[in-house]
Image (cartoon, rainbow, N blue to C red):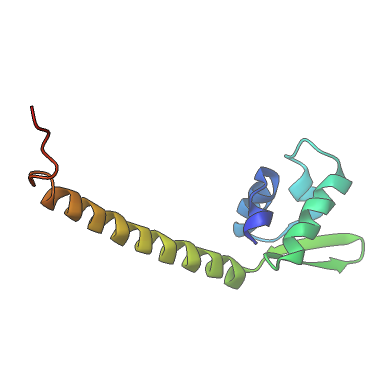
Length: 107
């Protein structure tokens, strides 16, 4: 999923789909690429489960899968929390040891 979101075009597509379903042609309109290229990006997003599509007649409509997106969001939030705790502990350690004899330089 993160590999799929590493591409700017795919992030743009996901951001558009967060606002609601869209046809492939609607997704392709603002992008500076061919329709087949947009389809390749959509295939990557579908393969990782972020997007699903359905075809009615000649129109393929894409939808975001909010549960999958939420899983990524939860993982990122957990990582952020863990790193904030680590950095807080480092800050506390540095504050405690700022004036210790081992840290002072001798003339």
